[in-house]
Amino acid sequence: MPAQPKSVPSRRADHVADTRGALLGAARSLFASRGYAATGTEDIVSAARVTRGALYHHFRDKADLFTTVMEQCAREMAERLIEQETRRAEAEHQEDTWSLLRTGFQSFLDACADPDFQRIVLIEGPAVLGHSAWDALVEKHGYVLLGEVLSQAVAEGRVDPMPVRPLTRMLGALISEASLYIARSEDQERARADAGAVLDRMLLGLRRQDAG
Amino acid sequence: MPAQPKSVPSRRADHVADTRGALLGAARSLFASRGYAATGTEDIVSAARVTRGALYHHFRDKADLFTTVMEQCAREMAERLIEQETRRAEAEHQEDTWSLLRTGFQSFLDACADPDFQRIVLIEGPAVLGHSAWDALVEKHGYVLLGEVLSQAVAEGRVDPMPVRPLTRMLGALISEASLYIARSEDQERARADAGAVLDRMLLGLRRQDAG
DNA sequence: CTCTGAACATACAGACTGTATGGGACAGAA
DNA sequence: TTCTGTCCCATACAGTCTGTATGTTCAGAG
Image (cartoon, rainbow over the protein chains, first blue to last red):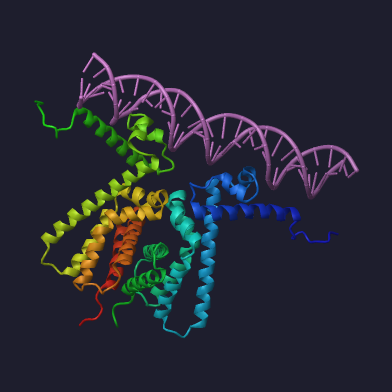
């Protein structure tokens, strides 16, 4: 009878996972700082202290590695937002639903300030994967939450009925551009306040118009 | 005394301009259809019926060629919009200024439907040039008109006072994403109507609030 | 006519990606 | 224990692409 049940991974499996994780970490750091094209596979494997053989064993090619890294970034962002959103929902469940939606978008904007996310997902992603594949990934991870929030807001009558799919994309693009604008501004504080104000005003346009 | 004044270009100069134009045209077509990375310099020069020597004579490197192509696309778009805008301004100068602004943005959205513009300027541009250089180019050609219209709208009190720079960027991103959404939709007609409606509502949020 | 420089074409060197090959470690069968 | 197959990874190699260096042609100045 073995000392450990079958479900416990072997030490060898740990090493494999460590190698793969090191590759992902190195790739993520380099893609975020230098971009996809300017990062050679040799740079990645030397940073991960392995050889290119390990890379091409774990990933089909360089684009596959990038896809995995981007998916990781997107998933982390989605989890962060969901956890943050549920915490707010239970904390301030008595507050006005409209101001809840407003503050939700503001914190969404703050979350997008992550440099890795900006560079890998927002900048490099569309050009490396092509816009259709990029869109599928973002749809899978990011837009589920945003689309859910929006359709719920429509269902509750907080915003006027309108097609949710284009609304989701356009609000996502709006927040993305706002975060990039803030990131490359001199005065971050001021840029954050300005972009937040503009975003808030645009959101206002979606609000239910008829006071009936 | 020469039969032609000095200002008349020689036939050789015509050939030079033709070569450069052929390179730009081939590069534009290929960059738009296959993207920057998937287009080799050999593809470009064979389509232009010259050799790589001509390319590297006229342009510093491949990125320089791309920059010139993108600048051409952006300039054409800006000229198209300006010409279109001035025509509308003189034709309907008696109409409501707010609805003028609204229809202006809708026709801006329609202009962005150009596939070359979408792929080269909106998709490939940021990743190839880097977001800062890309932003400088778009600032130079595209955002002058948009920013002008917006600051004028603020000055005339049609929209509430708010920082114009972030507003310009975010509206530009909004329209860009809307045009891309339309382009990759199954039902173009419906997508156009939906995106236009959402854009119109967001614009509504910027409108002057106090009825004083 | 000679000479210079622009406008290309050609040839070459370097870098990078992807693949084919080889070896070492580990698990399971005999 | 020994043998064997498979997984994991390192190394070597081939193909492609970019950028540069060199060569060639030709228009125009002196």
